[in-house]
Length: 167
Image (cartoon, rainbow, N blue to C red; front, side):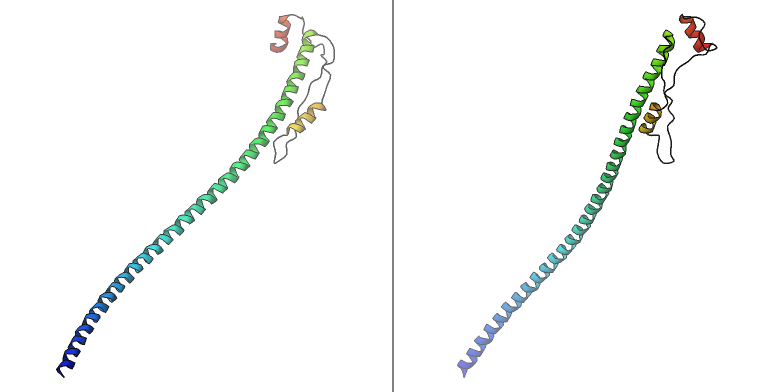
C-alpha cells in the first residue's frame, strides 16, 4: 500500500506539473489571442484610412476631369474665336485694300470707277457678326465712286487734300 501511495503522490505531482504547463500554455494562448485582436484592430483602422484616401483620390480625379472638360471647351471656343478673328482680319484687309483703291483713284483723279465695300454685318441675338456674313456683305455692296462738284477739291496740290479733309 505504501507503494501505491507513493505512486499516487508521484502521479499527483506529475498532474500538478502538467496542469501548470497547461495553465502556462493557456496564458500564452490568451496573450497571442490579444495580440491577434490588436493586429486585427490595426488592420481595420488602416483599412478605414485607406478607404478615406481612396475617396479623396476619387474626388481629386473627378475635379481634374471637370477641369479637363472645361479646358477642352475653352480651347474649342478659343479656336473658334481665332478662326472667326482670322476671317474678320481677311475681310478687314480686303476693306482696307478697297479703301486704298478709292483714295488712290481720288488722288490721281483718274475718273475710273473705284469700288468700296460697305460692311453691315447681321447680328443675331446669340452670336457676334460672322466673318462669312461680313464677307458676303462686302462682295455684294460694290459702288462706283463719283464726286459731285461741291465735294471736288479746288486744286490738285497738297493743299487740296488738306482743304478737302480738314475744311
